[in-house]
Length: 291
Image 1 (spheres, one colour):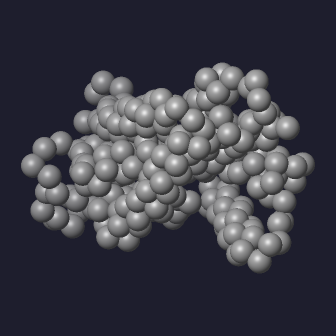
Image 2 (cartoon, one colour; image 1 turned 180 degrees about the horizontal axis):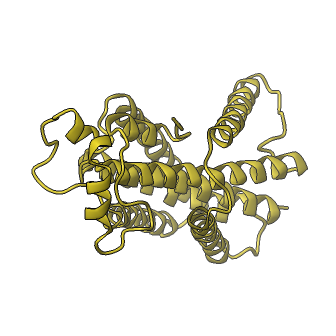
């Protein structure tokens, strides 16, 4: 069975085993009833006489879209408010004195909540998902200010650069959604293993760079040079391909007839990937616009 590279998605799939149901992007009228009748013997909720996991209906694509929209709405609102609060400070030093603590609180707080959601089986808890969105809003707003106003060369428009990062993120997301729906790249066990190997490799390099940096050694993967640009492009590619696994995980949950609340877990998983992609695109743009 395929396993998502996203720890949140893995947790959602783990708690909701797949079985036939309406597929991702295929929720046409009348299809749900037919699929449930045809796959009744394969559905674990029916086959094993499990008690209903919810008092309502099962997850649909509309649930995934709605919950993801709410989660991203909270993140974007907090990010805009955070960015506005920072840029209204009178001096750059005052701006940085506010941006850096907010960045750390958002990054560390979001990381802790992802761990709680993934390993504490709380990924479908809306309070945790929306709290994560708020914390990531602090992180995204702060890091957007740092990259677009401090790292880049003088004369570069911060608004233009952030807008490019947002458009790039949306373009990659919808592009990979089309790729998934038309089956141009199929999510197979071999594809999943290759992507997991790439993600582990990137994580090892990041941790190695962090540790060596404590001793004054620079590997060059975050310094803005050619190696850093190549590394960011690799990270962007991995984040893009990770969407395919996220879409596949959502598809399997819908087919399984998972509880409606599982849509919150899908929303959390997609948001994690979207934030990573946005930050990597923003970082790459900062390299290209630096002195």
